Length: 132
Image (cartoon, rainbow, N blue to C red; front, side):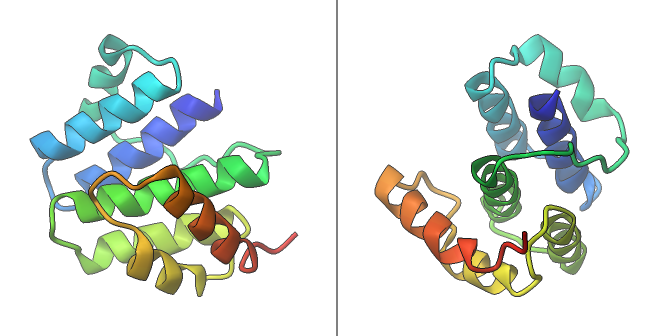
């Protein structure tokens, strides 16, 4: 269930600017694949609006995956809208992060693929913003 919830959050973010671009679609489909969700399950989600539901009892790693994927998606079309930043900040708060985590994420997350080492380093940096 948490993978579908993550897909829905990504779709909502992609829809903020009025349309879901090809790069955004591909990114969302790839995140789905990585979580065992087939593209034919993801594509219908792209046509709908979704409630903002954050599953309970997410692990620290899953919380990071959620916010990391949102920020990376926000950067993928090389344009960041105020509404997208606000959306990501709200989700970060719902995940249990201090909103200041967005500064770290905005500085360090890239739209291009990041190495496992870079992601792990960012995960450790952002962990201090997680309130538990």
